[in-house]
Image 1: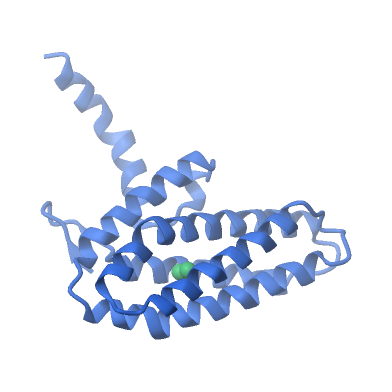
Image 2: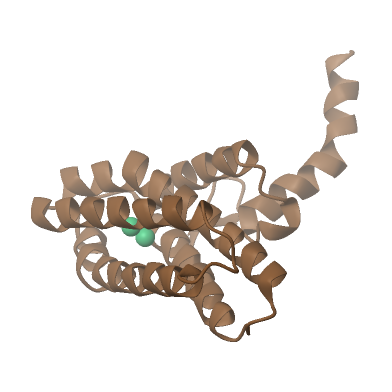
Length: 188
Ligand SMILES: [Fe+2]
Ligand SMILES: [Fe+2]
């Protein structure tokens, strides 16, 4: 955990990404527990998981991977990660064009889970340890990732109750508490 100037705890880049990984991995497990008749639940879970994956891939590609590419000498690992993101993005497009009652729906989501788990393992076992050793400000990078994540969540219409990050909770709490004060100040 890093600490900001205001003394608030904030997630470092790697902690934030691992938190995302755990969240989607839980969704893949939850999907396995659903049965034939649970089509509504399947659609809701798949939709939420695909949005999480899209946002996560995008913040990695825009912010984390370029920083890692500069800091560690491992273009092969980063190239492979980007190809894996593209494969999962293709499968996401395919499943989002399907209905839960379609024959290959469950299989499609299971394969997305398998690819994602493989990709997460490579990031956590190979990429992240190298980044941790490199000269890189993981606290600042974490803030940047979180800020972009919040922007994308808003853009993609992620509901506040589905945003389980600490920063998201802080943001919604500060929005309801401190806005009147800020407004009052601006009128002085
Ligand atoms: Fe990741
Ligand atoms: Fe990734």
